[in-house]
Structures are given as C-alpha cells and as structure tokens.
Length: 183
Image 1 (cartoon, rainbow, N blue to C red):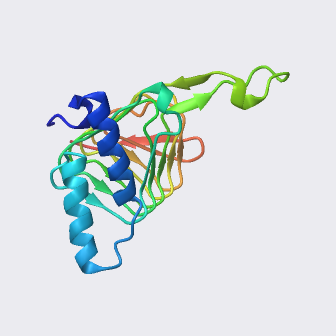
Image 2 (cartoon, rainbow, N blue to C red; image 1 turned 180 degrees about the horizontal axis):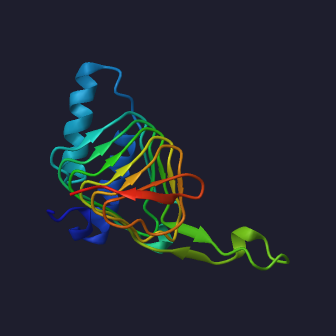
C-alpha cells in the first residue's frame, strides 16, 4: 500500500482533508463534474484508482482526537457512506464500502449520569479495513473495532462490534461469523 495523507505535515493534511470533504460531499449527477470530482479526490487523498460515490461524508467529529485517513489503491466507496476519521482510519488496497455504510472510529464514555454525556470522555481507536475487505450496504462498524480482516465480508445491514477475522463472513446485529471464505 502506498503512503497517503498520514505522511503530510499537520497543516497540509488539514487543508487537504477540508478540501476533500467538500468534494466528497458532492454529487455525481453531471458527467463533467464526475470526472473533475474523481480526479480531485484521487489527488487530494492520494488514492490511485479511487472510485467514490456521491454524497460521501469524511467526518472528523472530534478533530482534537487527531485521527488520520489513509486510503490505498483501487478503493471503492459507495454513495452516502459516512467515514468517521476521529480515531484514525486506514482503508487498504481494493477494499470496498457499499452504499450507506457507516464507519466510526470513536465512542463516548457515558458512565456518570450526573454529568452531561457530551462532557464525558471520548475514546478514539484506529480502524484498519484490510486489503480486499468489503463492508456491505447499510452496515455499521462501531468505534472500538480495530480491524476488518483481509478478505473479510460484512453483510448488508450488519452491526460490527468487534474485530472481524481474515476471510470471515459476518452478518447480523450484532455481527456474528457465519463461515470463512475459502482460499
């Protein structure tokens, strides 16, 4: 996997991510705009062969957590996907996120009922979507999941609450392994 945004200086990274967020949130409705948008995102995110749908949201809900976004070659991100990069997100080569997928890299500690939940601590943990992994349509990967293994598949509308093993196929709420893919 080639180096990406994580290699930029902090100021340069923030500028690139702000501009990328603007382009990613746009529409693919006009063919000319589609070409410009794809070209700009490929260069801004340093992601050769990136395929990205319309209205994708690159979200840094909590910039103070310092998360980074790294995207490999040949990544496919479907329309209306939301990627939270607060804790750091790495999407390796040929990974796919289908339409309406939600990926979170942070969580809130909500133990003390006498303190408003927004005032309580936040936990950010990096997430890696390994090579050839696939997060199905409307699936949710919650904060605290460290990895979606190489070649793993998350079924549509599943909710992932823990690490997914290499070549595992997981489905359901919460997602459970149904089998392993054969090599």
